[in-house]
Image 1 (cartoon, rainbow, N blue to C red):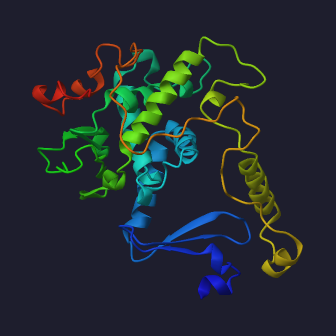
Image 2 (spheres, rainbow, N blue to C red):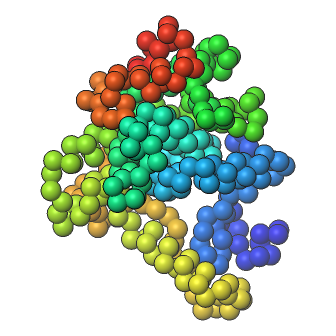
Image 3 (spheres, helix red, strand yellow):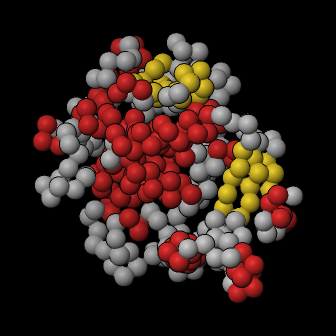
Length: 316
């Protein structure tokens, strides 16, 4: 009733009662922004504080998160209750990657900057896709970011689901008993998407850009005019201040927030939909590039958190 009184259309309200954390989903009438509301979840504000502190500690985190979240969104792999990787889990995955990236980088790149003073975002993105697409073993290894970060054995820590051993495992920084990643049951589909992105970008380095493929990233992102329209609309509302809701209802309506492949793609065909029935056979890792150049498991083995017997199983 509260949402209806604020102008939200009833057919715009969806109740997800079967999720681990029940949600009410709706589209904001004024801005067209999609909103999820949960109830009686005290860890929400704490998670926000953790993410804010991580953004301050790791400057590269914000840009990588925006790019990777949009990459997953375009493949419908960003919703936890449907098996994707949610925002909080993705932030922790990226944070752990940044930690080992800096630990394994050459001395002149420890600050994460290139010769012009900018972060190595292109290289970091490519290495992220390679690490979680080919190197990291979701079946045996879990992720923790506290105190500089670590990896743990899912069996030794009793976090291995015998029925679904592939499930992503991420220790919640604020509650070590909470596994943030356990809802991502499509994590192997996500892994396949990371593998595809790495191979596409890596091979794309040898091909020139064109009118259809104006940038290297346009090989893995499709251009969505609806998304551009939505961003422009929200920006206009923000810059002009909030409009009166009654006046808004009479004079305009927000563009549809639905992101879907359009006919004006930056390349002839849209990205292939990831398989959801079963994961593809493990692929052989491509030739390694720094900072993980010593061996496929160097970044993990050198971290010192796993036994030698486990390290032989880190690459599926």
